[in-house]
Image (cartoon, rainbow, N blue to C red; front, top):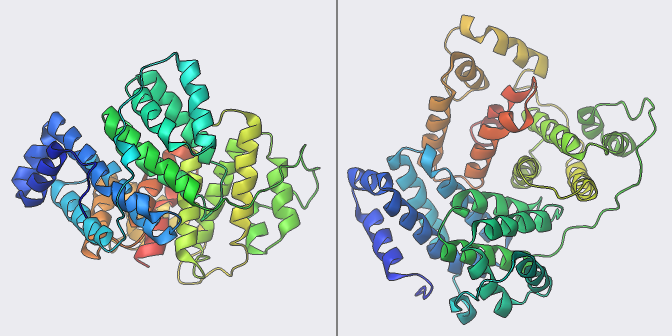
Length: 406
């Protein structure tokens, strides 16, 4: 299908990238202007597939994975990047790609005071009014402050929706990291595609945000992991309510709890859904939240979604947490372990070779054809330690192994 949105310059650089040698691709990437054009071309190239994905979770996951690869481009050697991009293009080719609406060709409207633009943006998004939204977003994308407002409003609008384990926020997070700094036209088209996905997907289940904290009692003191494993809803929600005055800290605890659940092997019944939950919680910790009330709404939505995975028995193929922690402390005095094992992940962290370990993991994933959901998990797990901090920051590499190389 002919993509009428794509500019001649974008077509040309995509063809150059696809036909170039490793050296030629490296030269393209080393030139800032050419790199910017290439990333814009990738965003234009995906638009028909993204627009047509509508509420198809599998198709939107292909979009998420593509955005995640582009967001990771600066970390990857050019040969790994090219292979990953090529595989993802083949996956997109299997999707429907309907013609894009002519409204996307509308030119930017005249700039207005920012507060007026923000009011018009909110109204157009609420009414799914593409005719007014296209020129407005094109105009706002030209101004750095207005663009920042657009990003914040999109993040806040999508954060508390739990449909498909936060797929709206996951899409936003990966697209943001791949495209937030692109030229105005590419940025605006991506934001429009994101909103189109939002309008097409069914809303997540609404949750009631309770007022006040839970009383302090032994039930509330039960750790989240134990409450989840035992499917103890009163203890789980009581603990969440007790943490409700500090919702971001509570989301951070949820994220760590889900990480431990995955390490225990509690992901077998629906691994793709649990992957999305992990990425969603990690994404929520990087998003702006405009108020305590909104952050509490996000927390309780995420908690309700998380409890859907409650109830599992720890698998015995990996040691328990205390044994993992003990190995980590003595890893350098142990024999060098096999690379893609839990010992290998902990040894890489202890020996200061984590960067190489992550790249070798990426190379192996490319060799396996970009397993579905790998790239968002790869990116989320890498930065999770910085996002969560604390003494458990070292556990996140184990998530990737548990899902993909176990």
